[in-house]
Image (cartoon, rainbow, N blue to C red; front, side):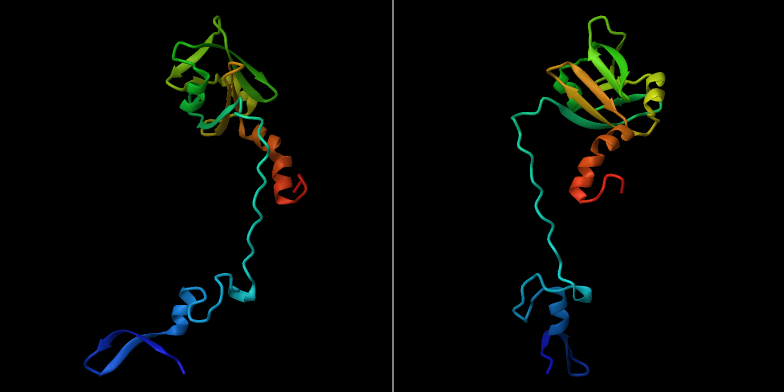
Length: 176
């Protein structure tokens, strides 16, 4: 026997309009059956919770500040939080180099490069070309206030650096 929950009345026909409890049970897990919220879903498969990630031990406050920025057509890229953590202002002079596929900016009083605006540096076309950075790419910015450096890592460098970590987290070979 199906029980009906009254949600309204149709006066003309004298019929009670309602909703079957089985429909309500489909919307509210375990409603009317005393089951837990972890009941099987479509195909009789029970949902499985992912294990909690282990957080690596930290030796204290990180000496690096990270951010992401999109490179515009003129090579301008930045993240105000990273540049602010470095303590760099608009008049900051830097020397620039390409090291291991990333752009390295180091604070230097005689440097030829500087900020183009609050929180932005310009990566010259030659350096972008050597690192495979294109207009529109999102790059990882890593700043070390202690060392006075800003690294601009292109996507290919970030992917290579994290390949083994991603494989370990997913439980697969780094080649997959």
